[in-house]
Amino acid sequence: MEEILKQLLQGQEEIKKTLQQHTEILQQHTETLQRHTEILQQHTETLHQHSKQLDYLEQRMIKIENRLDNELLPKINALFDAFELRGDEIAKLQRHLDDRLDIIALDVNYLLGKTARQETAILELRRAK
Image (cartoon, rainbow, N blue to C red):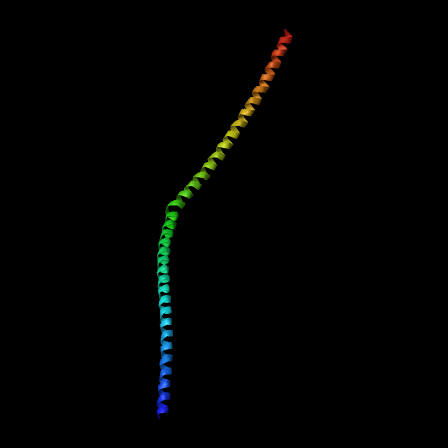
């Protein structure tokens, strides 16, 4: 019976050692889990900050889009309309000036012809004298 008790004590000692080893392993795993939990919390905070920044940037983008739609696009359209109108006015003015130049060219040709005829008549009168 003593031998059985010794075996039981020895079995209990082995169980006690195994439990201590498992306790140490569990403590190591617990420490590792705590470190990972801290890292995850840091990442969560970083993600939260980035989320806030994205929200802020999205609000700014919406403001810029609204300003573009409400203020800038009408001004740009007005500028294009004015540019187009000015182009039409320039084309009209160019046609008018071309017409005037054609008339002036005709008048100059008429005057040149008339001058030539008068000079011919003057020369004939001088010869006739």
